[in-house]
Length: 331
Image (cartoon, rainbow, N blue to C red; front, side):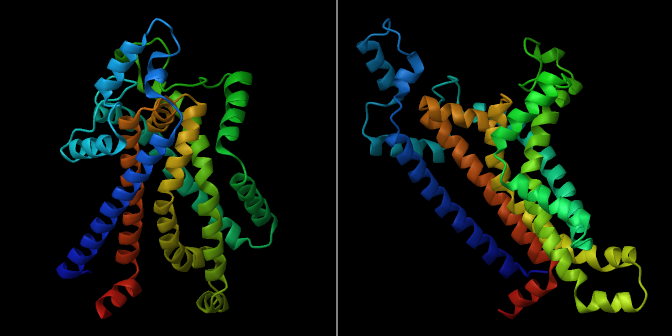
């Protein structure tokens, strides 16, 4: 295992990278928002002639939109590091409250999709690798190549048409039945609304896990020690259980955690198609309405989410693989 000095050094480097990444993302996001042709005041009040120029000016002054961009950025940044992430223009609530509410819905959706994509992709990848060149391998790889080239939003629309409109098996959208009080919403209601978005989102991550696992499986099955095991008379089941699973699981776990960014990106499209009230839906709405505080807050949370996934993948790789630990000790 790592000694305390190496652990502190590793954590310090990761923290420094996170800080630099945060600064770069904040500056880039703020710059893009400023370059947007969307006027937040017009997006908020609409094109109604009942709201005069004086009222628009008061709204802009209240939100600080009449100040220079640099002043607005440093004002937001100062408040942010003190724990005040501002107030959402759209929801008229603190940004952290909005993110807290939306994040719970998104996490439930992404966790289910993450586990499904990992388990299904890993199993299909092993099957394709063991059956290299056979019908099962061709069907699985063809299926994965189709998935990679299929837009998420198109797949979501297709799923809605088939399972919601034509068959009527699932609700069309949202996360709970419309018009139902929160106290009356059951667990089954939430699950029924989550099934199709979660399945659609999980399909996005299956292909990468499956193809990566397949390549690693083929490499292991064609290795010298597996050929020697065959020569000793070991069955395929014994080889898969004793030799294959142990060696192929580490790369699969790493790829699975590295897929956090892909998962979050897919969630944006899935939530839009299914009108699922999560962070992805809120991010799109904030961008279209020029809600800078909410968009900045969601962006920072997203960066942290992806960064943590990558960090976990690095740590797991370091802990599980003894060769990497030995290399660290030698350095």
